[in-house]
Structures are given as C-alpha cells and as structure tokens.
Length: 582
Image (cartoon, rainbow, N blue to C red):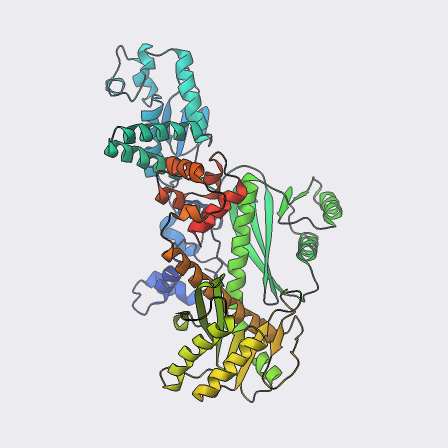
C-alpha cells in the first residue's frame, strides 16, 4: 500500500486479495491504526506468488527491507526456521533459528515451525538420524527410548557402523536438497504393499505422508538459488503493453515493478523488449550480472556488451532458462498479465475509451452500458453462450451471464447466437433488464444479421449494434467492425482507444464463454479427469496416482513435482497442471 508520494505504508499478503483489501474499507472499521492507514493510501502494488508459503517468505523479505510504518506488529526478532545438519562424526539433525554460526549444512527456510518440525518427525522415521543434543549423545552408555521405538539407530553406543550411518545422513541431505524420489518411491511401495494386504488405514497413512512430503519439498520460488539478476516479462492486450520487472538479489525475490505503454501493432514483442532493456538500463539504473527475458532480441549481444562496459562487470542476457530462472520468469509473466488486466479495468482507462468510442460512432452522448455476446463449443458439443456487461466503471461481473444452448444443429453459431439474443432480450422487452446503449456480437455479417433479426422480432431498440470479427491475419489490431447499413467493414487504427474498448469487451466475453464451456464439458464427463489428457495412458495414470496418493495429490502438485515422474516431460506436466487449474 503506497502513499501519495510512492512511500510504502504497509506490506501484507492475501489468499483472497479482494476480501483482504475490502476489509480495510468497511464503514465498521474501528481500529484507529487502520483508519489512519486508509486515509493515506493512494495506490497499490501487487506481486503474485505460486503458493502461500512463498507469499509468507516474500512478505518477510519486503518488510525487513522497507520497514513500513504500519507493519509495526510484524517487527520482531524472529526469523524463519531452518533444518541444521551438523558436521560431527555422527551428524545431528535439528531445528535451527537465528544466526548460522555452527559448522554444518542449513536447509530452508521453512514457512513455519510446524512444517519444519513435521519434516524432522518424518525424517526421524525414515532415516533415523539422531536429533539429540551433543552433550546428551556423548554421555550415553546404553541406547535410549528413541532406539527402542525405531526413531534412531543409536550411534551413541555404536549400534550402527559409521559407514551405514553416513548413508542415512546422505539420504537425509538428498531429501532436503530436493533429490527425494528414493524417499517417495519407498513410501509408494509401502502404500501398495499395505493396500495389497487390505490394510487400508495403514495405506492411507502412507498416502498422507506422501502428500505431506510433497508440501515439504515444494520449491520456494521466492527464496532459492543465488546471484543478482532481473527478470523481465511482458504482456500486451487491447493496444496496451505491460513490462514487468522482478528483482532477484542473492537468490531472493525482493519485489517487482510494472511499466505501461500504449503501442501500435507494428512492433513485435522482441522489439519492445529490446527497446525497454536499452532505455531502462542506460539511464543510470543499477545493472545486475544477469537479465532474464522471455525471448532473445536481435540486438541482445550488442546490448550485453554495452551494459557490461557501463557496469564494469559481465552482464548476461538469458532467454532459454531452466529450473529456478524459468519459475521466476513464469512468476513475472503472471504478474505482468495481472497488472495489465488491472490497468485495462481501471475507471480512468475505461471512461476515456468510452468517450473515444462515442466520437467514432458519432453519438450525441457517451454510452453508459455495453453488452457483448460470444459462443463457445467443441465440435458442436456442449455449446455455451456468454453475455458480459461493461459500464463506465469497467466490467460489471455481477451482471455476467452464461446460457446453455440447446435444440440446434451442432456447430451452428448463427442459430446459437439467435437463441441467446432472443432469450436475453425477451427479458429486456419485459422490463426485467436494462436496455444497453451498445450491443456487440463476436463475429461478422452472419452474427450481426441474427442480432438485427432478433431485435426486429422483439421490437427492442438499441442505438448501436456492432459485429467485431478478426481480420485476415487474425491478429489483434486488424479487427473488422460490421455496422448495420454499411456495406464495407470499418478498420480502425491499432492505437485507437475505441478499438481497444471493443477488443477488451470481446476478449472478456470470449474468456467467459470458454470457461463456462470447459466447466460444462468437465461436468458431463464421467471418466477420470486424467483420461482426457492426451499422452496419459493406463501406465502413467497408475504411476501418477501411486506417487501422489490420489487425484487430490495430483491437483495440489506443481509442474516441477509432475516433471519428476518418469515419462512426464515439461509439456505433459503443464497439460496435467492446466487440466486441474482451468
């Protein structure tokens, strides 16, 4: 939350951003602190993370860096817990918090003490590495209770050889370093053996352990790896471009920033990125050792040389990245898309585009309500139509509606459009719904003709009716507008705000129709969701269910988790993940 001068007032996290933000603006807020905060808020900056654990760690990093005035309650001396593996002859595994002075290996950070202790408890059962204090360990003459209940191999009385104990320590180290497939395989085998014996409670316990382990080994994208670098991603829509910068310092995400620019259709994505990198870093901004971008621009080599000379150290521009850098790039892309959609939906942007559209259409006053319709289906099956409504304040989500289209020939978009318009404007005719100032249909002359027929049949008068269709290249910026009474379609300039408004409402209608169609298609499909994914046969389905303990575990798995399964590559992992997160 930022003040009028851009000063950070407060940093917080939210699983549901809308609910969290609106809680500050209720009339019933009694806290003087919250009231003082709200009076000073002028703007918000948002960074999206992959998991709640990542949000926790990023929140702490940002608060420690910026120390906002209204985060007083969070200014304590606590740090995130780590797991410490000592360098002793018989290494000790324990929970650690604070300065890292002791010699050994530190794993973490963990988002909370509970998850750290849970991992210690799990590892104590699996590898039985000692967790006792060195003073206790040095004075043992016989094995303690931990040995009796098989939570320790009793190296204190040499019940295990140094070599065998070292193997258990090595497995523990591999687990915390992410090389954990041997542990997962062991639990999966035990689960299957218990299931074969009809010991379902025991099998369920192993299933839950697999699920817990997946949570523990989940990569923390906001704090992992090393090095200083900037990650640059881009999103563009409706004539507006958003460049998103993600700042990585010492392997930690320290924040992000969005830059917006209106552009014509002539520029390619690589040209935009090349221009931004040149202008941003050549104006005196601190230059990191590496800049990660989504695609390599033609002049990337020259830019790299120039930046290296200015910064007096080697500057690398990377595009084809993997592992953590790839996840950082995806995070930056997600934030760019979110920032762009927020900007497009802002009141100021919407109002100026409504004004531009009224001038283009020669209207006497600015329209206050637009409705747009689209059709979605797969080979004529499960046809769904959408109606989205825009006002001067932007998209009015509460007025969005979907329609299940029935009793038509499969794939007949004209008949589908006729049916949805008739059902919608019967209610307008009866006075139940408000008459829009502009009606937009996604399509060309055919869809526009259906709109004219329905309005004539019902006797509903709408000042402006428009059909918007993609041009020959089917690229944004080349749309053709069909208007009743005009023989030839109208093609606006790509940077025309009126066109951007029509693109925005058309894309929103398209998105809403597709999401409804997919939900309907998934609902009627009785088979396992895995069967609908191309490339997933019986063997891979069995392996996925075995490794993750069921569909719920697969739904919660990240793309990185899925890629660890033999036979699952990047593309297939993304398809599986997208299937459960549409």
